[in-house]
Image 1 (spheres, helix red, strand yellow):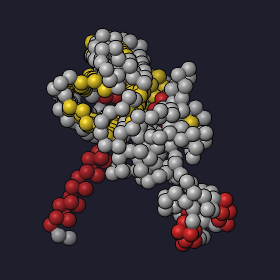
Image 2 (cartoon, rainbow, N blue to C red):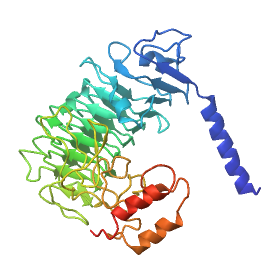
Image 3 (cartoon, rainbow, N blue to C red):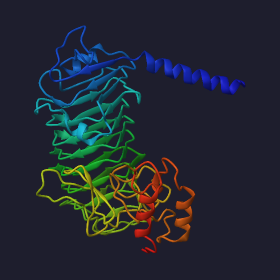
Length: 427
């Protein structure tokens, strides 16, 4: 092994050692706070008790349930880099059933002690938070990583209905930010004097009563990035969907739709003269200059009368139904499907897909709405001899991926029958 390879090996060993050193501390609404608690059989009751007992690298494993009352809001790691997560952050049902609810007695989480990107908040729902700044989450001079979380119906009496980020480089990915309210700036998220990255976020139903940014308000943040987000049905006097003050942001693969504002011409995106917004490969109501942008009804699946507005994109080829928990077929297909930046990774999207990421919050994920014929293996818009040749090469093989059309684990006569049903199909 050469010197470079040996060094990489040492780094890997050290990383494994650090991960192995961490312990898992379990929390459940039915648990009991006790110095010897925290096992799966003897979980703790409050999240803050677990955080106070944690060391760097530990995991706070929060089991499904509603967490309210003292010890379950205004939560802080106190500068310790820990992983705070639900039992399965990749399962939307688990995320929505693992709920931090301060009941307007405070906010959900506070990161103000220099927590780094190694401090991770993952797969939780925060609702019912209320604070001066950051109804659900406050972050100052810290850089936690926030993944696949839901922030719903939180309130800030000053700024940042869901989050207030100041002098931080917090990363927010694959999260839902919904139904928050702020009577001043930032109905959804406000960031001051720091850089903010939002990816795969759903931001809807937020309100800024007297200030800017019904959905997202970014202040003094020169290098913001918003990727694969849906910002819809937010309301505020200025910049109903997104507002920038002395900031710069790139908006890519996003949907900004049905946001309203009373003080700016563009209800979807507003900014002051010192701010820069570069929008590309996005669907913006009313239109917006930039490469790949469109202005077309995104054909969301939900209805405003439903308890949960479903922002999945309608598709003739398959759309994930949140309420039913299964894939369904619609009569129409959204123009936002396969309309994202061609350079965006689409490989996590469920087959069939068109070889490009969708716009919006679910683009590039396993819940991206489908597009195209499942037998069109080379994605050229028709099922022909080239597809048949590719199918024949996998004949009687195991785990053949997209060629296993009946998902039985083997390419056989059942798959051949399905393939022939699509023979000579053309878009």
